[in-house]
Length: 342
Image 1 (cartoon, rainbow, N blue to C red):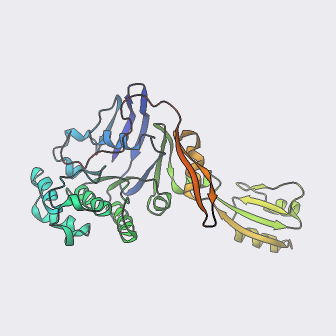
Image 2: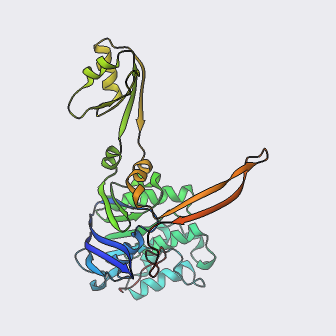
Image 3: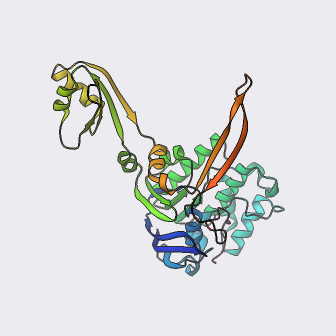
Protein backbone atom coordinates (compact mmCIF):
# COMPACT_ATOMS: atom_id res chain seq x y z
CA UNK A 1 0.00 0.00 0.00
CA UNK A 2 1.15 3.52 -0.79
CA UNK A 3 0.04 6.23 1.64
CA UNK A 4 0.71 9.91 0.85
CA UNK A 5 -0.23 12.52 3.42
CA UNK A 6 -0.09 16.20 2.54
CA UNK A 7 2.75 15.32 0.20
CA UNK A 8 4.32 18.48 -1.20
CA UNK A 9 7.34 19.18 -3.40
CA UNK A 10 8.57 22.60 -4.46
CA UNK A 11 11.39 23.56 -6.80
CA UNK A 12 12.08 27.23 -6.16
CA UNK A 13 8.75 29.01 -6.70
CA UNK A 14 7.33 26.08 -8.68
CA UNK A 15 5.08 23.71 -6.72
CA UNK A 16 5.24 20.34 -8.47
CA UNK A 17 3.13 18.44 -5.92
CA UNK A 18 0.73 20.34 -3.67
CA UNK A 19 -0.63 18.73 -0.50
CA UNK A 20 -1.45 15.35 -2.04
CA UNK A 21 -3.53 13.02 0.16
CA UNK A 22 -4.01 9.60 -1.46
CA UNK A 23 -3.98 5.93 -0.53
CA UNK A 24 -3.18 3.33 -3.20
CA UNK A 25 -4.69 0.09 -1.95
CA UNK A 26 -3.62 -3.52 -2.57
CA UNK A 27 -5.63 -5.92 -4.69
CA UNK A 28 -6.48 -3.38 -7.34
CA UNK A 29 -4.92 -1.63 -10.34
CA UNK A 30 -4.84 2.10 -9.66
CA UNK A 31 -4.35 4.41 -12.63
CA UNK A 32 -2.41 7.62 -12.01
CA UNK A 33 -3.54 10.25 -14.51
CA UNK A 34 -2.79 13.88 -15.21
CA UNK A 35 -1.62 16.26 -17.95
CA UNK A 36 2.09 16.76 -18.64
CA UNK A 37 3.64 18.61 -15.73
CA UNK A 38 0.88 17.58 -13.32
CA UNK A 39 3.34 16.09 -10.81
CA UNK A 40 2.93 12.37 -11.53
CA UNK A 41 6.59 11.50 -11.99
CA UNK A 42 7.64 13.73 -9.10
CA UNK A 43 5.15 11.92 -6.87
CA UNK A 44 6.50 8.54 -7.95
CA UNK A 45 10.07 9.67 -7.36
CA UNK A 46 9.15 10.69 -3.80
CA UNK A 47 7.50 7.31 -3.19
CA UNK A 48 10.86 5.60 -3.73
CA UNK A 49 13.08 8.25 -2.16
CA UNK A 50 14.63 9.70 -5.32
CA UNK A 51 13.22 13.11 -4.37
CA UNK A 52 12.68 14.31 -0.82
CA UNK A 53 9.33 15.94 0.00
CA UNK A 54 9.37 19.61 0.90
CA UNK A 55 6.69 18.71 3.43
CA UNK A 56 4.29 15.89 4.14
CA UNK A 57 5.12 12.20 3.89
CA UNK A 58 4.73 9.09 1.77
CA UNK A 59 5.12 5.49 2.90
CA UNK A 60 5.10 2.10 1.20
CA UNK A 61 3.65 -0.78 3.20
CA UNK A 62 3.85 1.31 6.35
CA UNK A 63 7.42 2.62 6.10
CA UNK A 64 9.41 5.13 4.12
CA UNK A 65 11.19 3.46 1.21
CA UNK A 66 14.68 4.11 2.61
CA UNK A 67 13.82 2.30 5.86
CA UNK A 68 12.91 -1.00 4.25
CA UNK A 69 15.59 -3.65 4.83
CA UNK A 70 14.86 -5.27 1.45
CA UNK A 71 13.40 -2.47 -0.69
CA UNK A 72 13.16 -4.45 -3.94
CA UNK A 73 10.94 -6.95 -2.15
CA UNK A 74 8.62 -4.17 -0.97
CA UNK A 75 8.30 -2.03 -4.08
CA UNK A 76 9.39 -2.55 -7.65
CA UNK A 77 9.42 0.57 -9.80
CA UNK A 78 9.88 1.44 -13.44
CA UNK A 79 10.39 5.16 -13.87
CA UNK A 80 12.77 5.20 -16.84
CA UNK A 81 13.33 2.11 -18.96
CA UNK A 82 16.75 3.16 -20.25
CA UNK A 83 18.37 3.45 -16.81
CA UNK A 84 20.77 0.64 -17.61
CA UNK A 85 24.44 0.24 -18.48
CA UNK A 86 24.33 0.02 -22.30
CA UNK A 87 27.27 -2.37 -22.40
CA UNK A 88 25.66 -4.97 -20.17
CA UNK A 89 23.42 -7.72 -21.39
CA UNK A 90 19.86 -7.90 -20.10
CA UNK A 91 20.82 -10.95 -18.06
CA UNK A 92 23.84 -9.33 -16.42
CA UNK A 93 21.88 -6.15 -15.67
CA UNK A 94 19.30 -8.17 -13.76
CA UNK A 95 21.94 -10.40 -12.21
CA UNK A 96 23.81 -7.37 -10.85
CA UNK A 97 20.62 -6.08 -9.24
CA UNK A 98 19.91 -9.52 -7.80
CA UNK A 99 23.42 -9.89 -6.32
CA UNK A 100 23.21 -6.55 -4.51
CA UNK A 101 19.88 -7.52 -2.92
CA UNK A 102 20.42 -11.15 -2.07
CA UNK A 103 17.99 -12.35 -4.73
CA UNK A 104 18.70 -15.87 -6.07
CA UNK A 105 19.82 -16.51 -9.64
CA UNK A 106 16.65 -18.49 -10.42
CA UNK A 107 14.56 -15.34 -9.94
CA UNK A 108 16.55 -13.64 -12.70
CA UNK A 109 15.62 -16.49 -15.03
CA UNK A 110 11.98 -16.23 -13.92
CA UNK A 111 11.59 -12.53 -14.69
CA UNK A 112 13.39 -12.91 -18.01
CA UNK A 113 10.78 -15.49 -18.90
CA UNK A 114 7.90 -13.35 -17.58
CA UNK A 115 9.04 -10.38 -19.69
CA UNK A 116 9.60 -12.46 -22.82
CA UNK A 117 13.30 -11.62 -22.98
CA UNK A 118 14.64 -15.14 -23.33
CA UNK A 119 15.80 -14.73 -26.94
CA UNK A 120 17.73 -11.51 -26.22
CA UNK A 121 18.82 -12.01 -22.61
CA UNK A 122 22.52 -12.28 -23.57
CA UNK A 123 22.47 -9.30 -25.93
CA UNK A 124 23.70 -5.82 -24.99
CA UNK A 125 20.84 -3.81 -23.54
CA UNK A 126 22.13 -0.60 -25.12
CA UNK A 127 21.03 -1.90 -28.52
CA UNK A 128 17.49 -2.66 -27.39
CA UNK A 129 14.49 -0.98 -28.99
CA UNK A 130 12.25 1.16 -26.82
CA UNK A 131 9.81 -1.72 -26.41
CA UNK A 132 12.49 -4.23 -25.41
CA UNK A 133 13.92 -1.67 -23.01
CA UNK A 134 10.47 -1.40 -21.42
CA UNK A 135 10.32 -5.16 -20.99
CA UNK A 136 13.73 -5.14 -19.30
CA UNK A 137 12.68 -2.30 -17.00
CA UNK A 138 9.52 -4.18 -16.02
CA UNK A 139 11.56 -7.33 -15.41
CA UNK A 140 13.79 -5.34 -13.06
CA UNK A 141 10.74 -3.97 -11.24
CA UNK A 142 9.48 -7.52 -10.68
CA UNK A 143 12.87 -8.94 -9.67
CA UNK A 144 12.27 -8.80 -5.90
CA UNK A 145 8.75 -10.27 -6.22
CA UNK A 146 7.48 -7.05 -4.57
CA UNK A 147 4.15 -6.49 -2.88
CA UNK A 148 3.90 -3.05 -4.50
CA UNK A 149 4.52 -2.46 -8.21
CA UNK A 150 4.77 1.09 -9.55
CA UNK A 151 5.18 1.69 -13.29
CA UNK A 152 5.43 4.99 -15.15
CA UNK A 153 4.10 4.71 -18.73
CA UNK A 154 4.74 0.95 -18.99
CA UNK A 155 3.27 0.50 -22.49
CA UNK A 156 5.61 3.03 -24.14
CA UNK A 157 7.10 1.45 -27.24
CA UNK A 158 5.37 -1.90 -26.84
CA UNK A 159 3.81 -3.59 -29.85
CA UNK A 160 0.20 -4.88 -29.69
CA UNK A 161 1.30 -8.21 -28.21
CA UNK A 162 3.33 -6.34 -25.61
CA UNK A 163 0.41 -4.09 -24.71
CA UNK A 164 -1.80 -7.15 -24.19
CA UNK A 165 0.95 -8.76 -22.11
CA UNK A 166 1.31 -5.78 -19.77
CA UNK A 167 -2.47 -5.51 -19.46
CA UNK A 168 -2.74 -9.14 -18.37
CA UNK A 169 0.32 -8.81 -16.13
CA UNK A 170 -1.11 -5.87 -14.20
CA UNK A 171 -4.48 -7.51 -13.60
CA UNK A 172 -2.73 -10.73 -12.57
CA UNK A 173 -0.54 -8.91 -10.03
CA UNK A 174 -3.58 -7.17 -8.55
CA UNK A 175 -5.48 -10.45 -8.33
CA UNK A 176 -2.63 -11.78 -6.17
CA UNK A 177 -3.33 -9.00 -3.66
CA UNK A 178 -0.46 -6.72 -4.69
CA UNK A 179 -0.63 -2.94 -4.92
CA UNK A 180 -0.39 -1.89 -8.58
CA UNK A 181 0.13 1.83 -9.31
CA UNK A 182 0.40 2.79 -12.99
CA UNK A 183 0.67 6.15 -14.73
CA UNK A 184 -0.29 6.50 -18.37
CA UNK A 185 -1.52 8.96 -20.97
CA UNK A 186 -3.27 6.21 -22.92
CA UNK A 187 -6.82 6.52 -21.66
CA UNK A 188 -8.06 3.54 -23.66
CA UNK A 189 -5.58 1.25 -21.91
CA UNK A 190 -6.31 2.70 -18.47
CA UNK A 191 -10.04 2.16 -19.04
CA UNK A 192 -9.38 -1.51 -19.77
CA UNK A 193 -7.06 -2.29 -16.87
CA UNK A 194 -7.65 0.14 -13.97
CA UNK A 195 -10.17 -0.38 -11.20
CA UNK A 196 -9.45 2.91 -9.45
CA UNK A 197 -8.16 6.29 -10.59
CA UNK A 198 -6.14 9.07 -9.02
CA UNK A 199 -6.18 12.20 -11.19
CA UNK A 200 -3.90 15.18 -10.55
CA UNK A 201 -3.50 18.57 -12.17
CA UNK A 202 -0.92 21.27 -11.38
CA UNK A 203 0.21 19.10 -8.47
CA UNK A 204 -3.21 18.91 -6.82
CA UNK A 205 -5.64 16.06 -6.43
CA UNK A 206 -8.56 16.39 -8.84
CA UNK A 207 -10.22 13.01 -8.39
CA UNK A 208 -9.83 9.84 -6.33
CA UNK A 209 -12.51 7.56 -7.70
CA UNK A 210 -13.40 4.60 -9.89
CA UNK A 211 -13.42 4.66 -13.68
CA UNK A 212 -17.18 4.08 -13.60
CA UNK A 213 -17.84 7.00 -11.27
CA UNK A 214 -15.60 9.40 -13.18
CA UNK A 215 -17.37 8.58 -16.44
CA UNK A 216 -20.78 8.86 -14.78
CA UNK A 217 -19.97 12.28 -13.35
CA UNK A 218 -18.92 13.43 -16.82
CA UNK A 219 -22.30 12.53 -18.27
CA UNK A 220 -22.17 8.76 -18.13
CA UNK A 221 -24.30 6.88 -20.57
CA UNK A 222 -26.81 9.26 -22.14
CA UNK A 223 -29.70 7.90 -24.18
CA UNK A 224 -30.80 9.93 -27.19
CA UNK A 225 -34.55 9.54 -27.75
CA UNK A 226 -36.75 10.96 -30.49
CA UNK A 227 -40.55 10.86 -30.29
CA UNK A 228 -43.54 12.82 -31.57
CA UNK A 229 -44.73 13.30 -27.98
CA UNK A 230 -41.68 14.33 -25.91
CA UNK A 231 -43.78 15.95 -23.18
CA UNK A 232 -45.66 12.76 -22.46
CA UNK A 233 -42.47 10.68 -22.56
CA UNK A 234 -40.93 13.04 -20.02
CA UNK A 235 -43.81 12.37 -17.64
CA UNK A 236 -43.53 8.61 -18.14
CA UNK A 237 -39.78 8.52 -17.49
CA UNK A 238 -39.67 11.00 -14.60
CA UNK A 239 -38.33 9.52 -11.37
CA UNK A 240 -35.51 9.59 -8.81
CA UNK A 241 -32.08 9.83 -10.42
CA UNK A 242 -33.46 10.40 -13.92
CA UNK A 243 -32.39 13.55 -15.78
CA UNK A 244 -34.10 14.58 -19.02
CA UNK A 245 -33.06 17.50 -21.22
CA UNK A 246 -34.15 18.72 -24.62
CA UNK A 247 -34.82 21.87 -26.63
CA UNK A 248 -38.27 23.39 -26.66
CA UNK A 249 -40.14 22.32 -29.79
CA UNK A 250 -37.70 19.50 -30.53
CA UNK A 251 -38.69 15.84 -30.76
CA UNK A 252 -35.32 14.81 -29.30
CA UNK A 253 -34.58 14.19 -25.62
CA UNK A 254 -31.35 13.30 -23.81
CA UNK A 255 -31.96 10.95 -20.89
CA UNK A 256 -29.57 9.80 -18.13
CA UNK A 257 -30.29 7.55 -15.17
CA UNK A 258 -32.33 4.99 -17.11
CA UNK A 259 -31.24 2.51 -19.77
CA UNK A 260 -32.33 2.44 -23.41
CA UNK A 261 -34.06 -0.88 -22.73
CA UNK A 262 -36.14 0.59 -19.90
CA UNK A 263 -37.04 3.61 -22.00
CA UNK A 264 -38.18 1.39 -24.85
CA UNK A 265 -40.29 -0.79 -22.55
CA UNK A 266 -41.97 2.16 -20.85
CA UNK A 267 -42.65 3.89 -24.16
CA UNK A 268 -44.25 0.71 -25.53
CA UNK A 269 -46.30 0.24 -22.38
CA UNK A 270 -47.81 3.71 -22.79
CA UNK A 271 -48.17 3.55 -26.56
CA UNK A 272 -45.58 6.25 -27.28
CA UNK A 273 -43.88 5.73 -30.67
CA UNK A 274 -40.10 6.23 -30.76
CA UNK A 275 -38.16 7.31 -33.85
CA UNK A 276 -34.71 6.98 -32.24
CA UNK A 277 -33.30 5.19 -29.20
CA UNK A 278 -29.50 5.43 -29.06
CA UNK A 279 -27.09 5.04 -26.16
CA UNK A 280 -24.23 7.57 -26.31
CA UNK A 281 -21.29 6.62 -24.09
CA UNK A 282 -18.81 9.04 -22.55
CA UNK A 283 -15.27 7.67 -22.85
CA UNK A 284 -12.68 7.88 -20.09
CA UNK A 285 -10.70 10.20 -22.39
CA UNK A 286 -13.64 12.61 -22.62
CA UNK A 287 -14.19 12.48 -18.87
CA UNK A 288 -10.47 13.09 -18.25
CA UNK A 289 -10.35 16.04 -20.66
CA UNK A 290 -13.37 17.63 -19.00
CA UNK A 291 -11.91 17.17 -15.51
CA UNK A 292 -8.41 18.47 -16.33
CA UNK A 293 -9.31 21.26 -18.78
CA UNK A 294 -8.31 24.01 -16.33
CA UNK A 295 -5.21 22.15 -15.16
CA UNK A 296 -3.39 21.79 -18.50
CA UNK A 297 -0.14 23.77 -18.50
CA UNK A 298 1.18 22.95 -21.96
CA UNK A 299 -1.00 23.63 -24.99
CA UNK A 300 0.13 22.72 -28.51
CA UNK A 301 -1.20 24.50 -31.58
CA UNK A 302 -0.97 23.65 -35.27
CA UNK A 303 -1.21 26.30 -37.97
CA UNK A 304 -1.15 25.94 -41.72
CA UNK A 305 -3.26 25.13 -44.71
CA UNK A 306 -3.44 22.03 -46.90
CA UNK A 307 -1.52 22.30 -50.15
CA UNK A 308 -2.04 20.44 -53.40
CA UNK A 309 -4.37 17.52 -53.86
CA UNK A 310 -2.61 15.14 -51.50
CA UNK A 311 -3.92 16.92 -48.42
CA UNK A 312 -0.45 17.60 -47.01
CA UNK A 313 -0.04 20.62 -44.77
CA UNK A 314 2.32 23.54 -44.84
CA UNK A 315 2.78 25.91 -41.96
CA UNK A 316 4.26 25.55 -38.53
CA UNK A 317 3.63 24.05 -35.15
CA UNK A 318 4.16 25.71 -31.81
CA UNK A 319 3.78 24.92 -28.17
CA UNK A 320 2.47 27.26 -25.52
CA UNK A 321 3.17 27.02 -21.82
CA UNK A 322 0.76 28.50 -19.31
CA UNK A 323 1.53 29.11 -15.68
CA UNK A 324 4.92 29.53 -13.95
CA UNK A 325 7.96 27.93 -15.52
CA UNK A 326 10.76 29.03 -13.24
CA UNK A 327 12.67 26.77 -10.90
CA UNK A 328 14.65 23.62 -11.55
CA UNK A 329 13.42 20.70 -13.59
CA UNK A 330 10.15 20.21 -11.71
CA UNK A 331 8.15 17.15 -12.55
CA UNK A 332 10.88 15.75 -14.76
CA UNK A 333 9.66 12.62 -16.48
CA UNK A 334 13.10 10.96 -16.40
CA UNK A 335 14.13 8.85 -13.42
CA UNK A 336 15.61 5.42 -13.05
CA UNK A 337 14.84 1.81 -12.34
CA UNK A 338 15.38 1.40 -8.64
CA UNK A 339 17.69 -1.08 -7.04
CA UNK A 340 18.62 0.32 -3.62
CA UNK A 341 17.20 2.67 -1.01
CA UNK A 342 17.92 6.33 -1.47
